[in-house]
Length: 471
Image (cartoon, rainbow, N blue to C red):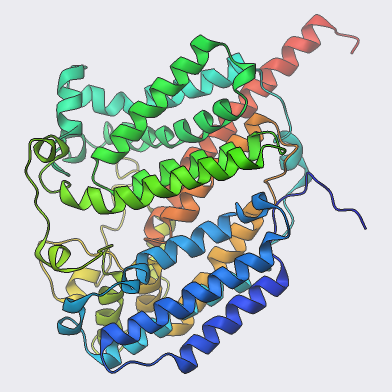
C-alpha cells in the first residue's frame, strides 16, 4: 500500500508504546541515594525512551519528526531533566529525596499524557486544510513579512521615540531594563505590546523564503535576511532563551516543510546548525542576561551563584516542582480549574475588562516561599497545583491532543501560506511547556497569520472574478 508523500506528519502508535513503556520502566528501576542521583537516573531513562520512540517514528522520513508533539516533548525534557544529565552538586542542598521522587513522578505523568494525547486528536476541518493550500504570490507573502516586522517593533519604537540608536542600546541592556517591558504605556497602549507578538511570524516566513529562494529576487532575499537576522539578534539579546529557541524552532519547521523534499542533506545541515546555535545560546545567554550583552562584550560576566556552581544550568524547574509537591495539598488545597481559567482569559486586555483577575489565589512564589523573584515550574508544576498527578496527566493529554491535531495541518502540498500557519503554531507548542498561562497568547500570532493570509486570498479571488466574471 502506497503512502501519500504529501501526508501530514503523524506519530506511530508503536512509538508511543515505546515511550510510555520507557517512562514506566524509568519510574520502576531508576534509583538514587540523593536527589541528584535520582534525577540523573530519570534524565537518562527518559532521554533513552524519547530517542527510542524517535527511531520508531522516523520511518525513513526526517520530516515526520518535525511535529508539534515532539517539539513539546523535547521542550519539556529540556526544561525539567536535561540539566541533570550533568552534575548538579547544589541540588542536594535544595530539596530532599521524597520531594524529588514525587516531582519526577509528576514529570513522567506529563510526558505520558502528551505521548498518549497526541493519538486522541480530531480531524482537521476540510475547509481549513483547503485554505492552507491557497497560493499567495511572493510579493503578497512579503507583505505579511513587512506587517510582522512593523507590528512587532512598533511598540518598542514608540517607547524610544523612534530613535534607532536608543532601540539598539536597550537591546543590549540588562533584561527587564527596556522601557517597553516596564509599563511605560497605559492600558490601551499596552495593546500594542500584545500586537507585537506578530514578530514571531518573522522567523517562519524567513524559513520559507530561504527554502524557496529561487522564487524571490536578490533584493527580496536580502530584505528578508536582514529582517530575520535583526530579529534573531533581538531574541538573543533579550536574555530569554525561550524567545531565542522559538525563533530558531519556527524557522526550522517552516524551512523543512517548504524546501524541496529531495534536499535531505541540506535539511540535516540546517537542523544541525540550529541545534548548535541553540545549545551555545543556552550557555552564553546566562552570562549576560543580568548585565546586558554590551557589558558582556566589554568583558564583564555575571552569573547567579547557583548557575556558576552548576556544570550546566537551565532553570531548575524540577526544584520548583519538588517544592510545590511538598505544599499541595498538605498546606494549600488544589486550585482546581483556577489556572486553566486564568490561562483562557489572559489574552483579554485589562483595558477592556477592568475586573480581570490579577493572579492566582496562591502564586508559585508564595507556595515556595520566596519574594522578589519570578519562578518557573513548567506546565507540570502548574498542573500539579491544580490537581496533583492526575491534573498533570490530564493537562498532558490536552496538550498532546492539541499538538496532534495541529500536526494534521502540516501537509507537504500546502502553499507557503499554509506552511507559515503550520510553523507559527510551534510557538505555542514550545512556550506552553514552560507555562500554561502563555498558551492562549502564544497562539495569537498564528491567528494573525491566518487572518492576514485569508484576507489576501480573498482579495486575489475577488480580483480574478472582476477580471473574468464568467469564470
